[in-house]
Amino acid sequence: MTTWAVAAASLVYVGLLFATAWFSDLAGRGGLYATALLSGFVDVDPIVLSVLNLFGGERLSPQPAVGAIALAYAANVAFKLGVMVWYDRRLAARAVWPLLATLAGGAGAFLWQVI
Image (cartoon, rainbow, N blue to C red; front, side, top):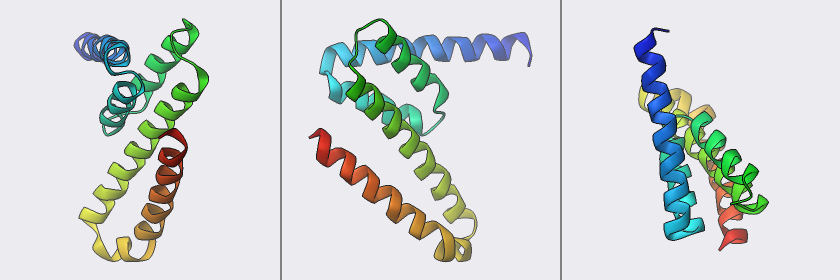
């Protein structure tokens, strides 16, 4: 990695850390979950580090921390499965739709418990 790439990744992480803390303070769990969902479409690592940083600083309890990480992971998997569907529809008919149904069921069960 070049120095510019490392600097850019660091700035993205700092920005996400700031956004996670700000949205969590501004909108509570909804802001945290929205940040987790949006960042999960790109990468899971920065939101996991941000949430664990808030949890370690005792600004976040365990349930929303686990929920935000799970939501980011689900968004990341759904995005990757969507890309697979876009590239190969025959593969999607055999493999991706059952996975998406399972993911949707898990997300629905999570939201049922949270809301």
